[in-house]
Image (cartoon, rainbow, N blue to C red):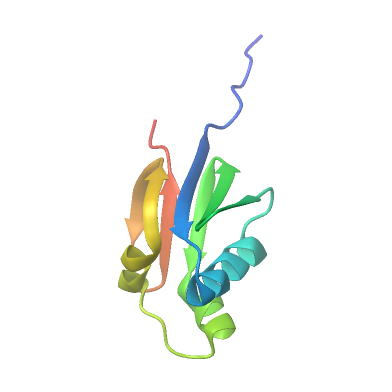
Length: 96
């Protein structure tokens, strides 16, 4: 009998500002089981297994074009590995 381990938590801490709130709303819409924690000046997004940031979802909420490299300006820290970062999405997960 094998026991499957629970997925490890991944997450990202973002600076709290108006533009980043749109990113948070997009991430909430695209990720089930997401936990959002507001702290002074910071928003922590955590999720078991895999966290996805979709360019189209962010653009929809911002009301303007958004390139994934702009995410670098929002990040304070993250845990997990950035396993994909291209023009359409960013994925944070653990490879092992």
